[in-house]
Image: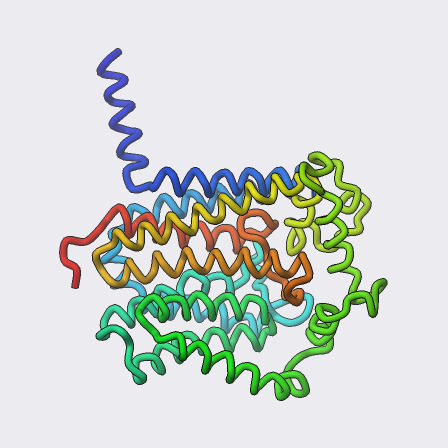
Length: 368
């Protein structure tokens, strides 16, 4: 019996020795809460589909955590190059509601832009790891090109929300590498200067509607402003403890739009109230903090930059979706991580945390 227990213990150790259990526990908790929300908002069919994708994502996380981080670093340019191929393919064979954002693979739909949330910070970290830090102007310009190429392609699909998140994941790597904040000011100034040009020449009518409804949703309460108005009603009606799981009137009377995807967090807010929202936000903050703590433990620059950027990128994902559903930011079609329905988003996010765990489990002896 003792031999059997020792064998089981050894097997369990070999299985999870590369996993960061506190981080993994928080991620699983978020996924389970997401499945509860999807069950209420969309039924067991969506729960089964999303659950299967979460299992695939967790398997990928476990597999990647077992690869030495130095090996991943060596393969990063190839991974980045390969991730660009499906991004280019959408312009030929892609599909989507407002453009070409998805590839129909028969069994599943793939959103190539989601892959760049993982591959882009890897590539920027790989490049900066080879350069003296803090980065000088030529290095920043090359890193900007690495970021700008995929971001530009995503904006052409068009998918402005995802493009912003991809750009943020790359910029965070630069900031962690010591980029002065005045560069951020220059970038924001450039965006503001280009805003009139984008408004008249690049933004599509539905994108302009989203911006106008952000400024004054009541001006078209039964049309373009409907989404954000109903979302805010759902959030407010949740109160402190919520209306109860499966009891949200806004969700079950179909007032909340896209209630399983972009506005899934509105359903959570209505049914679980402020206590539920605070719990989920605390889990997100724990995940972000854990990534930053792991980054501080890393000895090589590539791992440190990648882990830190992964945590900060998650913070931005949550911030953008939370601001969107509460009317503090324009509606840009960004899902709430691990809460909203979406296979590519969930799997790519879990893959990024697999990289974080690989960095922690395989700290290189050779720091070069």
